[in-house]
Figure 1 (cartoon, rainbow, N blue to C red):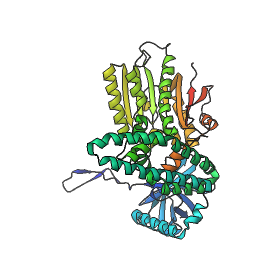
Figure 2: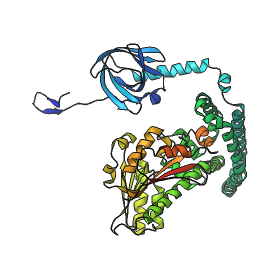
Figure 3: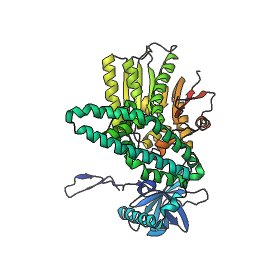
Figure 4: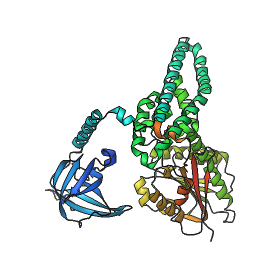
Length: 492
């Protein structure tokens, strides 16, 4: 469109712009449900809008020049939902080949109607499937372990609810009994629950193999049907599982983990909440924070040769509420020089919380520190040089949890980019869930908190883009849940 148009008075009116909202197919429908056909060749659709889509071009598939007119079919579950002309609007180079942008020319796609059609297809499919046949994919040992857990949870829900109601009949005098009931239950149930967790983890280990994808999907469905609903009275479990902000480890979930208290409207809910934040993975998150605080101290101790006025420059990627920074400021950092922290995150609430808490601690302690926070999407972060956020190279860059969600190729690229933004002698620390471990079951299967677990060797491989002889090591937390890839840049 042009820059605007004039009305009868000659007044220049602003240009109208509208781009229909795009949806990733795996979020809007499900991977593989929708495909696009051009001259008999089927392409996988990555994202879609009412007037176009972006398709993944396979290794042996052709592309058409930009501005080409092509005849296309859009298929949903192999049924044609659009047939007509389209225009190739762009071709992008991506990590796994090429991506082709297509604009539909003859009509629009009614996305709500397609979503409805998709859901109806899934409903029909659910009726056609025999649940017993699906469950046959899941090892018997795993089904027994989940049923054991469900029986344990439901039994103690009934017991605790009965006695809580009995104490409530005492009115105010019953409050102390209710509080004591929670403590008694926690002490008695902690060890049996731990044994149940280990039993289920052992039974699900085979399901974590790459060739067990279908069985793993059914096992997760079974767990979330039989066990998870029994646990949603526990606030930490409910928050992580329902994902109100779109992902499980948001600032509130992390707050539950760090606080490690009793939360919930019932004794049963409070006990299960406390047991969930006692999980080794949750303990690993707390250990991870302590490790990052220690890394701060190590790097700061190596800066003695810098001029006295040179600040200690630190950046946290996917910082969350940055409680490690809050606690470092409150404790009074053992280093003498001023510290400039930069926090980058996709969640505005987490940054707001970090900003408020860190500035309060700075004022209270009179600390020599500065703080800058940047709210950005993941896509913007990837497309923006880190130097745009930090202005100068950093002495310490860390990402505690981001890489639990990033595939290998992109992870190695980001590690290389972050490393380039280190000062000589600086440290880059990358956290990642450790494999193998015995603690993945509750996170992965019960609350649907999916992580990319990596072995020590796989984490070391993320440093493959670094060509100079850097010092590289891996440190694992005491629970065996998380590890850090530590890369120190050589001094000149």
